[in-house]
Length: 204
Image (cartoon, rainbow, N blue to C red; front, side, top):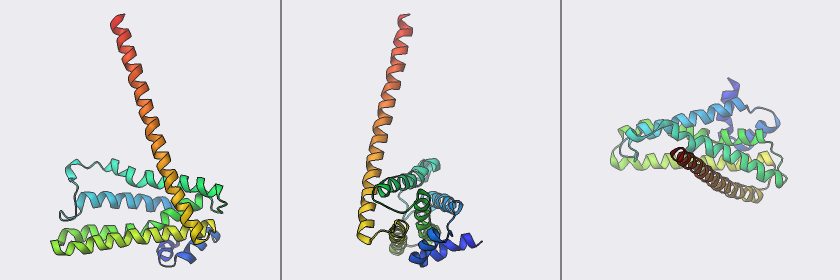
């Protein structure tokens, strides 16, 4: 139970919390994966069941599996890219520390998105501003925690943390571009082989 209370203390006392996570061994990978899983579920629920005044998605055409790419893939990309960047820039954080710091930073989004999704079904048009305000607050809280987490885990200064986070985003964009390029090339090769096989069969 203590491991599940720790994320709640960390989001309210981030400097002390991230220090305890890295140097006192209070963070757990299992809890980190549980947080990412919960956020994925909450995001799916938000897109499926948020009130129609704030929900621009048509639930009939939503695929819950597709939602994984908006949570899990960016999470993995961030951790790998940040580890790659900070390894070259004398960061002290291990890959495990980066995964836990990133996942624990997501807790405010889990805690706020679920109740706002429920309440949005009872909101009038003029009250929807509170929905967007609370969701924006959760997102800013996440960014703040991620910044403190990266700074504490890698033992960087504030300016160095900003630089490494920006470099991490650039590396993520490069990885996505290369991934799409490789996927396109593989698809073209497969199409070429299929067309070649079809032509040989017809000529035989």
